Length: 294
Image (cartoon, rainbow, N blue to C red; front, side, top):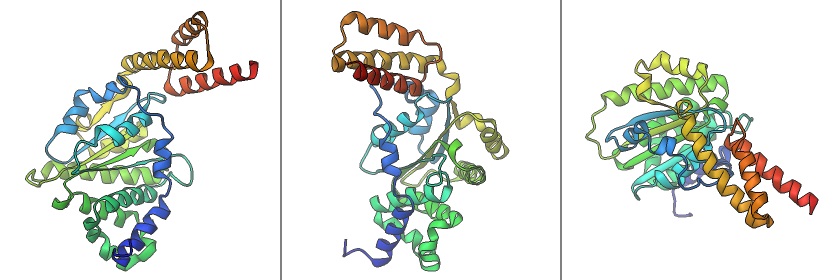
């Protein structure tokens, strides 16, 4: 590390201090079970965004408990890691002081990008010389650097993933939607001859204020929006698949007899409002009840 330029090391350290927990928060989500998240992974709109040969924005909206954050972890760890030349950077917003602002999100993305592609730090040198450690608060400069570095020909393919946009504080969220919309509009006019592609994927709940903010800027909104709330039947089928997996694990871990396991599975499958969050809480509750009674 001592051989690296001093400004690079200082900047990387400042970015990390601002956004130190991004990996920890991602890894709190469970791994995707095989066969799940197909409501996105096999969706035509996702496939078109993933495969297109130029820059692109995709907004995935879906109801609470549909597994958006599990999907994001899987995308970041697996599906988007297609080649050694593809750099994937991510951040998950949370409704707390640590993770609810755009500056922290942009610092997390830049820390990952510069860590993986050191040469792209050249796009931050002027801003770092001017602002020093205060750069981590300057969302406008951070966004400019993020766009310049991500569209650099030397960057190859880059994808930025932003999860749970609805949990970003309102003023920052509106600003970020404006920037994302501008990226989309600019991408329509950029030549596709450059070697790499910059893709951005955003997830959120399907809130009207987010839709309205996007629609003010993007007249062809349906072309960049995957409406997961219209895929609820498929989501429920996937949740049912996970229920069967979890009950099988409970049977093995807790030593349940076959009749008890079958009855438990039937009860869970008959619940009307099934979500991943509900299932997680239900399974944890069953484990706690079993431990207290044995």
